[in-house]
Image (cartoon, rainbow, N blue to C red; front, side, top):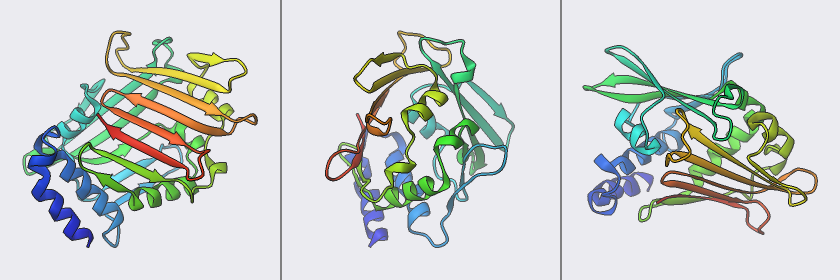
Length: 248
């Protein structure tokens, strides 16, 4: 049944998602299928001592152009040679563009396949290990694999009912990771951050707006995240906790 849905998407892709150049949406679904439907999984999530979380794609599908289109911006730095390529994106607090300690570095590795570079590995900052315990990663993979993806407009809603909210980062953990909030409303249990891709410019559209709402004990209740074409809303207080991700 999964295969039927996948090939059905391939057939409607040229008409349904013209905005996603080269049928990127199909390649995203193929990657998801490698993670969720193929035993053994062709996408793995690993963690090694002294390194950040690594997502490894054994059969790369997403191209370098796909990633640049998704991010909407050229990388901060590039590297590599003829058979391999590396893109590095660095984001820093918009109000503290020189504060590298609160910055986040995303490293993407590509392998050349049939004349184009395809994504083979993603490495997130080691500092995120503190808020991404292994049980939370495993739970996130299960949630993603159960989610239904809507083609038009591209979106998905993740059912978080089975996720142990005690594993989610608290206010203190997020502040230790991201630093002092851009906006911190006293007594409202809200905190907001604004991050920009380097070089950070206030007028740039590549600004990530992060808004978190916490309970009295600092537990995460809601999150409202937006960046470029993308938005995500996390609601942990409704009878059915969800996370909705949309591409505008």
